[in-house]
Image (tube, rainbow, N blue to C red; front, side):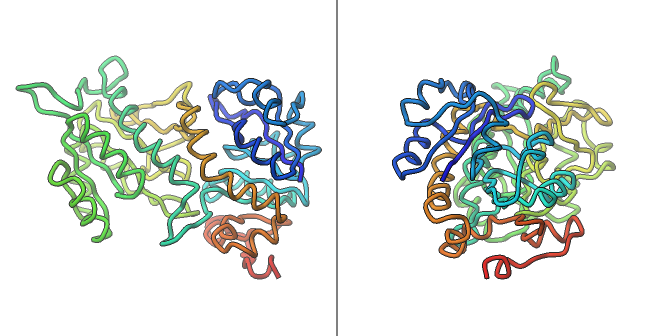
Length: 371
């Protein structure tokens, strides 16, 4: 199979779909790999590194979109990229379709076979291709929040770890999954006063055992959530419903109860955000203020640490890319039910139920596609 990767064009996105090492593995399996010139510069990988791995350097994205049978990306294709996708081509990337009707409509119109990293499953309902980016985003959320809390950036002027004689900052993490756990770890490590909210008793028990009193755990009822948000210096939104839009847990009304200069970091913004007042921002302009509360809502947070992020997600996305290239997409999905859950759009049909429900499309069951 001819596999192509292009330079990411989303604002301040420096990651790349394939590392030189991943390209080498695909070539070793007998596949042809095309890489747009300069695609790896954001992670410090020159064209020569890809050529040494056996890849072919192409001058522009248009050549790759026109000639590759599978496109491996990082972020959802932008409008100019979606216009170049075609029926029979495989797109393998993060998509986050539920809050993005324009992208979904374009993918449906193109006829492409779109496999989303974030809905590929693992044992125990795990999301193995999303996990490494959730780990990165969770850890970055505390870094970003700590910076936003500085007075020069519009925040309250609070140091999360405090100093002797001065109380630490109060961090509230909404959601105890991978993002929330990693955010809490970072905040605890800085010496902050940390509270984690979740609705799953098993998650709360696991977190309580792990942190051994260094972070509090609370059941996330409406009254408790409102009380904790009002008292927080930094709130991390770490809620995920796989494939679906995030619920709006922090309302506009709650902002009036918060201290001026408090900070909200919405890690769920890729799925529409879990704060009512959120809208996607970029690394170029990461924050905005609503009712005196600073919002950090960067939709591609891991792009800020591109090298770490690219190698982290290639570790988990490459085995599936090899399977798709080796067997063809249909045989690969038939052979692996977990990979099959990644299929979101195929030949003009929406094949992921949460996306179809959210955006009003007729749902085509996976079994019908693979029949």
